[in-house]
Length: 136
Image 1: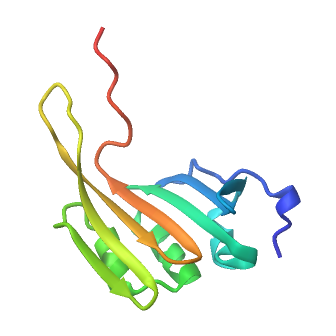
Image 2: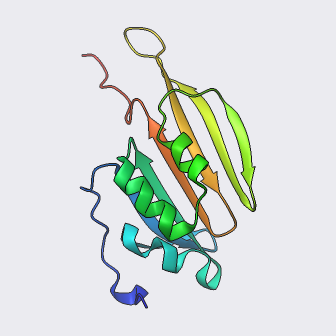
């Protein structure tokens, strides 16, 4: 069992992990390790938020086994260029959104793929992670 009083910041240096935290009643309780998301999702009314940016297949596989996600959901999350859609798997929503960001070259298109349920929320993005620097 994870002791939330002694929880440590997750290793966001792990390729693809932007953030991983436990929320309760709309408040961020603590950062958690990706390895703990399965045990904490839905516990005592908590919601796990996991932010991913272009994760590797091995990381998606580990998350799939911890959260019991469908194979097709993981396959879709790992594809960078998909059409916008909404899929429902039991009590989990999987959404593919097209995003855009104006930069000096035009408006490149990216994707965001949120996955929601009553106990967890995650987001898998491809494309630009941050706003480009403002020209001087």
